[in-house]
Length: 91
Image (cartoon, rainbow, N blue to C red; front, side, top):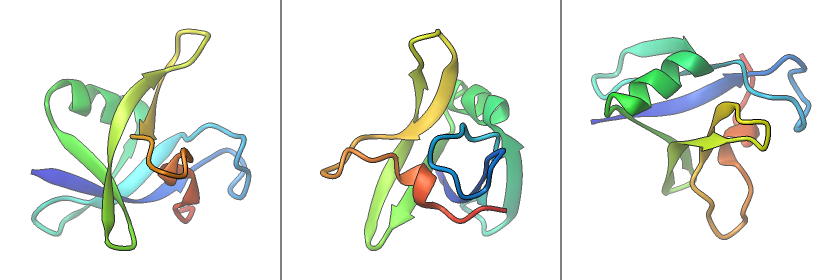
């Protein structure tokens, strides 16, 4: 069962260059949750699924690794090649 990501927290709320620190969303039962990126990475490694909904499309959140070797969360690339997480509202 997938968890929908609805909001992100970044050090600078409206910057597209900053990393995401935390995520907020709704679980499959309608319960709201909030978690750090580290917690989400651990959950994905344990088999939980997360996604971002844009219009009528759903994009899976996956673990990626930066050039420096740091793990982070992003959505699978779509036709725009943009990370749909960065378009979510801040909290």
